Amino acid sequence: MRLGLGPVLWIVLSCSTQPSPAPRTVDLPAEPGETSDTPPLPSRGGTDADPPWQSAPPASSENAARAEALFVQARTLMSQSRHSEACPLYFESMNLDPALGTLLNLANCSEVSGDKARACRLFSMAATWANEKHQAERARFAESRAKSLGCP
Image 1 (cartoon, rainbow, N blue to C red):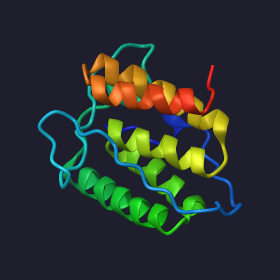
Image 2 (tube, rainbow, N blue to C red):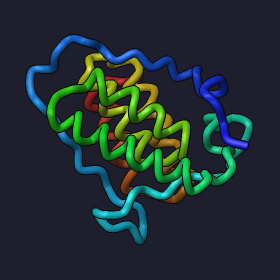
Image 3 (tube, rainbow, N blue to C red):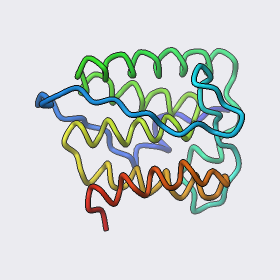
Image 4 (cartoon, helix red, strand yellow):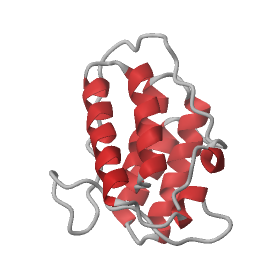
């Protein structure tokens, strides 16, 4: 059974409709064994304190393919500075097939959309998740982005 929107609504997603001054893309650190053409590997397992998607069962091949298509579409929209359209796609991708890379991109989307508080929360969650998955480079990346935002 896959997670529906209910369990992850604690991340209230509402991207700003105000245009951003300039397009921004982010080169995220790759997971071990990942190439630039390979989507990030999803996280599985976790504890009760983890975000709900971390304990989600593996995505069906249909959900994984849909999540990848949404992720690619969101990246394209971000490169066109269409942030208000991209953020919901990252969120939907996250629901279908949770992945640390998707979470990092959702955090970035929130930041460039002007929602600093949400970006801080998401970068913090990503740093924690990356540390738990022993992905030090991604953890440092998320921590660095949170620090650059002045997150608590």
